Length: 129
Image 1 (cartoon, rainbow, N blue to C red):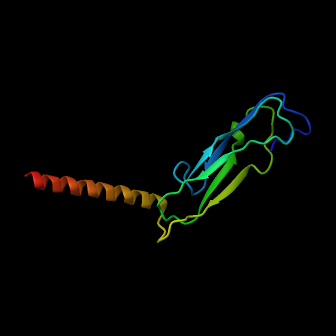
Image 2: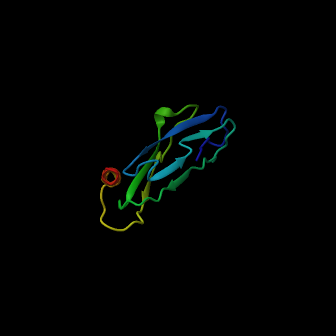
């Protein structure tokens, strides 16, 4: 929410959103846009809508956190970053089974795929020979 102390912006203001937490942007969720922009003339109370969309995967990961932080180092324009400057989102898992670390689970899929590829390649050679 923009706080202009009752006036309006004489110059555009923009800043980036830094992404953190245990959830991975792109594979656990998507966020658009990844920056906040208030054009010239934006008035007190102006808001910027962000679309945060969880990605449904097949991995049993348990609850994960996505931390969205307005990056004060990227601030451009006549503004000061107020509070709160960050928001924590909890993503609950809808998959069942034993939880494994997300990176291990994704790596396991790759290993299984490579083993299957090797098996079929070896099996095909035996049929041809």
